[in-house]
Image (cartoon, rainbow, N blue to C red; front, side, top):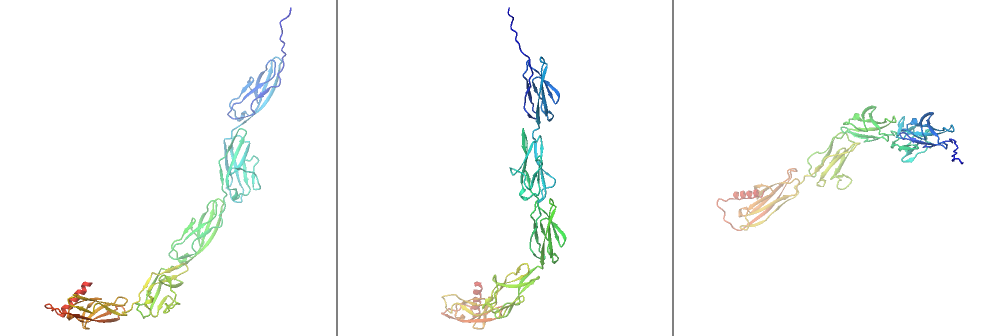
Length: 476
């Protein structure tokens, strides 16, 4: 008889186990470990974390990881037939995600030529840090150093060329983050200030000074006059100046970041203001008489010059040969009609010229000639009246008077209307008198009347003259 088959299975193991799992994981995540070992019969498995048993079975699934979950995970395989066990361990690295990167200033603000440091402030597990300037990687040079872990950037002597946007990027194997831009502006100054403003001022007027200085940040300004503070701010406007306002004005620029100041001064010379300039005449200008124009100035002046018709008055020519200047006066010896025009005098001081209002010189003369226009003969019946007009070359206009046959006074005015009658034939004389020069000149013409006309009732020569005067008044 043959026995049934006996299946011989040789028991062995476990051989060295193998753990399959990630080497690194992020906090908050779950990791699964798988342990296997060659064994007959299959092994039983136990899991240990840092020496303490945490689970059984070939698969171990952690809870949400924390940084405390970092460590050695051990799998123990046990064969209950052979009575043997075998062990293997694996390190799990747990990292926190990078949740913050921020560039911050360490210590003092950046000041030109001084040491300055930036730090990369981070949160999370950081394995490396990279610095960038204006988007480009930054490396150490003879003026720039990094700390051992690169979280600090130090400028041994910060310069204007270091201005720019700085960022730091923090990395670990599972995450990274780049900081917002930090705008580095190197503080400096103030450099030597500059004062803009006049060097001269007039009493009664105000003066404005402006002070500026190259500086970062902008400087604060203080003003001093002869050693005493008078104002703050970049602009200083004085009150109405007096002679006591003459002196040294000092601007002090101060930078409250660098703690430095710089000073500049400017001298202001104050002169007495010219308050008014007027041309005055010595008397009424009459041709062939001497005349003096005086420049009347209120206030202190240095020089005076004269102008005619908006142009400087030049005396070294034939036209102005009879004109001389002495002190502040213009002398005409004598004054002539050709001297007519608009005269001004200009008084100057250190600050500026002051020009008088225009003085119009009109030289009075004449009358130089008298002329009578009108008919010398009339025919009765052809006209009712004959009009005679008297004119004279004169400045100002002459006053006119009329005489008939050098006896009867007919009236005044340049026009006279004579009734055409035989009684009105005769000599008519016009007398022109200049009311300013007091000179008189006359002219006579003879009026011839022809024809015949009976005399009207009650008409007489006096009546005819009254008609003539009536006609003359109607002309005006």
